[in-house]
Length: 221
Ligand code: 5GP
Image (spheres, rainbow, N blue to C red):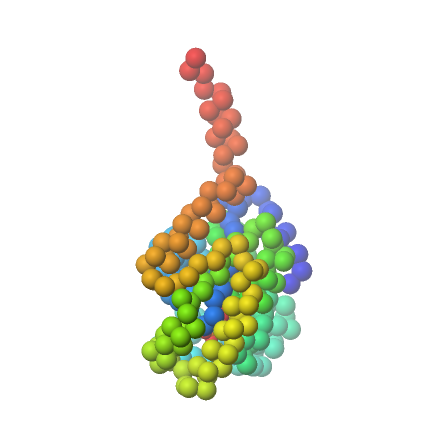
């Protein structure tokens, strides 16, 4: 992916957006937390990934993912259209570059629901502009219960996801924030607090310097 993303982030804009990278094992609640955070915040855009995995019941092309064939994925990759991509659960998943750049141009932040490999690739290229959040399940038994209750995948697929959950969880140390999704509303409040606090970081608020100049110029004593 090179430093194209970090160069893009450094362009002068009224508001310098940042990259919110959320990872978790499958079934820990990352997708519904991410979608709700985006729905509640007009300044936050969701990065929609391309994937070679088939759509699950209820999923829509261009809403959950761009569902593409293996050949289409190869072509996109060949044209350099991905910021990062990774093999996950025997399918390929990639982050298209153009919508991310366009959202940053509009002064938005961008949320990525991606696995640890993708989060690492993006953060390695844009460290100062990345915030990484890892969501843990309360227990492996609960994770398994949720995956079966969701009933979106076959038993072998669920077993594969559970096996991979151990590898994903092993990467928690790469993240800036870690939370346990035991109670959904509590976990949502935690994610929203992280987002709000990160938006208030000094270096993300370009308007502060001129505002302070204005304060200094205002003589009241
Ligand atoms: P699922 O098949 O359950 O939708 O996603 C499987 C895993 O792939 C999840 O951990 C999800 O976060 C991750 N994933 C989704 N999109 C991307 C992407 O564009 N890049 C990477 N590296 N992982 C992704």
